[in-house]
Length: 123
Image (cartoon, rainbow, N blue to C red):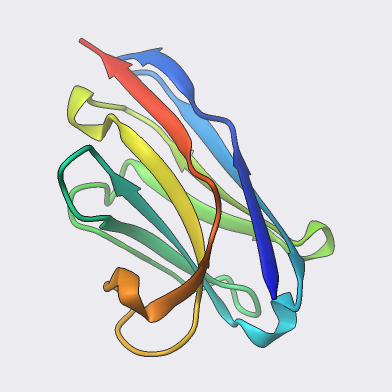
């Protein structure tokens, strides 16, 4: 079992920044990659970014590339998502998740999820 707790969401004006945190506990060593997804009501969860615990390798959705940066602190078992130049279309509930197997871009490949944190970007 892995427990994930996100924090750091909030309301920000367009062009602003937020940093999300995801604190992991439990059998985190079993999961080499963490993912960030986001979801708006009525739509499926959308891939945002991934990061590996060991090397810190990252991958991003085209929609956030150059604006968002994923990072991790292995000593704290925490992954982060630094979000800069935020746009109203970034408004969503953001989730972190532990990757199980398969396509990193597909939410079904992840089997542990945090509770989500709301990010609202005003225009």
